[in-house]
Image (tube, protein in one colour):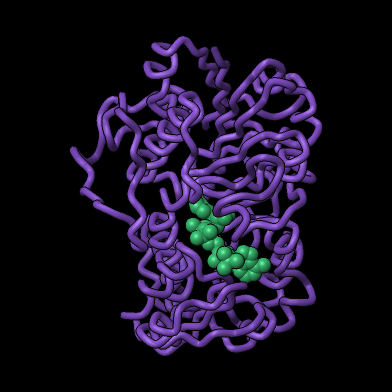
Length: 400
Ligand code: NDP
């Protein structure tokens, strides 16, 4: 029987919700490319309820305990005295969400001799040292597509929010003002602007599709080119590299995974290629950007705005400069954990666990690392190596 160690974010400060704003979720039949939604044999939770926080337990307790397994759930994940580090020693499975990542560094993997499966309840397994997972025979899997559309919606919201100067205008209202000139002094239309995505995978392509009706010119760069029919349908302009794309864009959005090849891809040097006054939206991973180079570019006006929900490390320490830099629209890491998304990734987590415990193959599209090598979707989208360096900084965060 296995021990499953699950790291989730804290419940809301006023307690686990007892009521919700809406009574149901719309039905989504299939994802955009035809992939089926998660197919566990059953679920033990009510769709649309809070599953991603500690008390929600991803709806897994009944299933795991009725099969004789042990489930430990905690939000205490950072530092050598954390519950996570203590419980890891004899854990067989670790489940973690990118929003509140349990960093599985090489050091921690070495302290977990029983560990066989690192399961990401969401998308993006860069919080696991993938090289160490390969070297130790740990399988890494994530719930591909579960929240890609959630994030794409967020990207569109953030682009509109920055370009139209939404957040500062909203603040004038809550302060009791009617300061129209203050609000519009930085407000533009997106119509006619050039927007480019680094990566046109599930999220990147969904962003482009959603921006098409706004009358924007659509650019992308990716390691693999999209089918000609898609390029023609959306009128896409392809670039062989991000460096080639940046100078053409009023808005740049990052939608690739974090791996050694993409770490710090936006830095002091590559920012020189951006148009003055470009907007940058990054809901992919904080470490795709050089933290301080972004701050400097906002301070001297090279960037007109930066928004996103991803930081490094997570949670971001109180003194992280992205909390206070000018013209930003940052939120905590929330785009992929709407109540709608939680329902899908909790079901996907259960599906992967059922496969793992019953000795059935985990879907290829969920696999990142298997049998000592990048596998499935991981072999397509990631590169070997490690992107967890510096994650111990997360221990500096103190919950308010
Ligand atoms: P996909 O796997 O569908 O897409 C990733 C794309 O990135 C692929 O098309 C891949 O290219 C491309 N890519 C990889 N490396 C590079 C590179 N060096 N240069 C250009 N393109 C590259 O994943 P999703 O679209 O669903 O998610 C993307 C990322 O978004 C996740 O990895 C995660 O980090 C982040 N994310 C954030 C969430 C949030 O809540 N903020 C939630 C979900 C995801 P190819 O396969 O063609 O090689």
